Image (tube, rainbow, N blue to C red; front, side, top):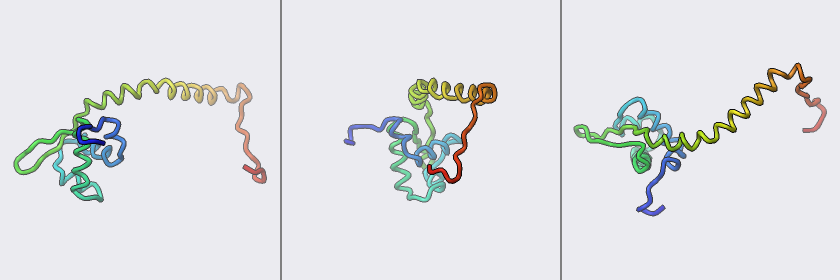
Length: 121
């Protein structure tokens, strides 16, 4: 990725460490020292994660005295929510089918067929 390209929301949340940082910041503003205390990695590594989150505009930092405090900016997550909402229809459809099968399994004669122990998988 070139220096002129910024990370987007999807890239930013792709990493589990960054998702955890977002969860921590959802509870309130934190300095980098407090964020780092929740991970088994260096302050420099956390700073890189915060930089990516800042590029995606998910996090902002501001000076408070001698320290910089980071704050969650959840607004860009709306783009992600909008994108994911399209796929809800597939998830909801599968749940409806499962509910129907479970509720009507006795009526339609549907049953789970168990494999015999000697039968190869």
